[in-house]
Length: 376
Image 1 (cartoon, rainbow, N blue to C red):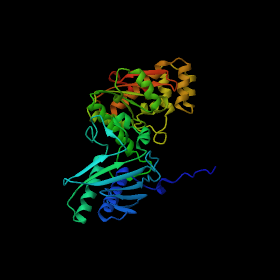
Image 2: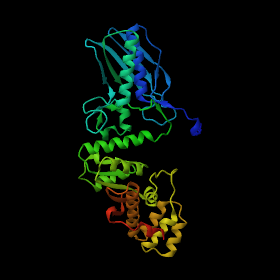
Image 3: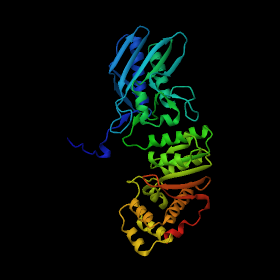
Image 4: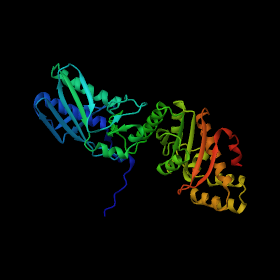
């Protein structure tokens, strides 16, 4: 098998959002409906201030309606909607208005807190404005004074949505039509951070004042077992974005946050790293050694910690030595660094688990004020 070459980030291709694709398909479909000629391409203006051309895979006219289909190209970004078929179907209305709705594969909002009202198709404000604007421009260009209905569909959208956070956000039946810039930046963090902000907003709108932020699916599973009384909306996968997630919680008035994760990422958080991706921060083993010393570890064990390769290895050492106090102190450090990042204002507790779900340590942050002692 041919090995795929890893690209330099500067050489990666930008892609296009579902919102941009929907706008282009709408332009092609409406132009076809007016002119009676199938369109092979549509050029639209993107929010970033430049034009982009989209190829239509299909464009069909059927009496008083027309549809156009384009394939989303996410460029070199590993986007769940890459290669998705985006279809816009337009038809005439008797009334002089423009109606926009979602069809098959476009989700519908069922929970408050999102930028789209409950009951409406999950077409976000910027894509919605792009689509409506292009319809108005085409009608003006051809001097037509008629109402138009636009329906955006994504045939595989319901299946694609299983790879997204839509279900947790209360968007059912398909994907969301998204995009504030019109383009997709390869490996951009913006989309994930936007989903975290929306998840916090939905939770708040559903009455949740206690949220549980986890670093992944496994830690979320353990968190749900730890907090069985909380609704599903209260659990949010923050991934590596600890600092951003905490600030969103404070910004939106959340009263209590539980951080749940594992040894590797939370060892970095305890040091003050608010982005805990492997490329964004590294584990300070001298720091872990000092915490171990304060928890009663022998000097021999402290030396082994300074020579360790991974935080998980240190965790195994502490577990074998039955130094549970180490994990509690590490959790305390996570709480204190979290407080420092957001300037207090939220009750915070931290829990660390093993990969197999064993609880290693826990601490409630509002009782902590001595993090500096761990740095010797």
